[in-house]
Structures are given as C-alpha cells and as structure tokens.
Image (cartoon, rainbow, N blue to C red; front, top):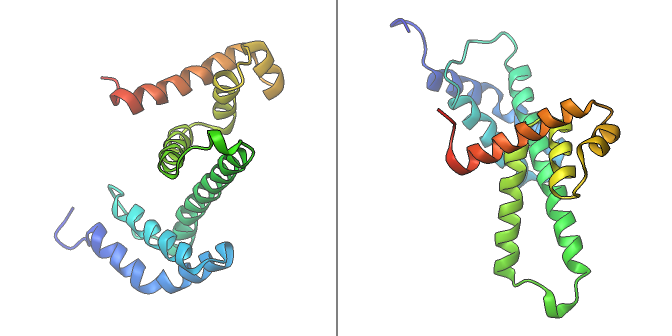
Length: 172
C-alpha cells in the first residue's frame, strides 16, 4: 500500500458515516425488528473490516446490500432452525423435556452445525443431512436431488471435510 492509499479501517469508516442510516433503514424493512436490524447493520460493517483488501467502490450500497443479504439469509435460516427445534420440543411429554440449560446448549450446537454446513452448496448440505440424519443411501439421495450417485459422493465428501475442519482445523 502506498502512503497515499486509505486503509480498510478508514474506508469502512467512510462507508459507515455515509451509508449506515440507509443500510439500517433497509434492514428494518426486511426484519421489522429495530434491534436485530441494528445488530445486522453492525455485523455488515464488521465483515468489511475483516476483508483483506477493500477497494474503493463506485457502488457502495450494492456492496453493503450484498453483505447484508447474506447475513439476513443466515439469520432467517437460524431462526427457522430454532423454531423447528422448539416446535419438536413442545410435542414431548413434560417428563422428558430438556432443562432450559440443555435447550440452550442444543440450540447453540444447532447454530454451530448450521454455520458449518452453511459453507456448502444447498445440494451438498441437503445430501449430507439426508445421509446423516435420515439415513438415506446414495442412490436415493441422487434421485431426490436429481444428480448422479458420484455427485452425491462428492457432496458427502464436502460435508465430511467441513466436519473435519470444524474438529481439527484446515488440513495441511
């Protein structure tokens, strides 16, 4: 970086100053929850700070929208997952209901798994879950997803790789 080039921190500061209110308004329309919109707005700018290089962009709102949309998708997916878990719990008899602490631990584990599998394509994620949770075989998954059996094997390998990375870190 030459002496005259602004740092990422400086560029993010400018984007924050010039576009934060707009982004917050956009998120509020999508969420109908001011507090969650505020959180996602902050997360958007934190993501920008984490980028190795942040070029000056002609369309800063497009960049912010792209990042915020990804965060929104993650938020909605996690919310749906949590609702499904809590709905399943509501059908259990009181005698086998997990404690509040156990529910919190389980929800965090579900979030972690979702984040882990969220790095996969939708078909790879579906194949992995069909195989691991539903016990479906390769041919059945291939038919359901409309792909070849060899492609299912690739998807499962991708899922297992993500599990390996979560457990042991990137392979060397």
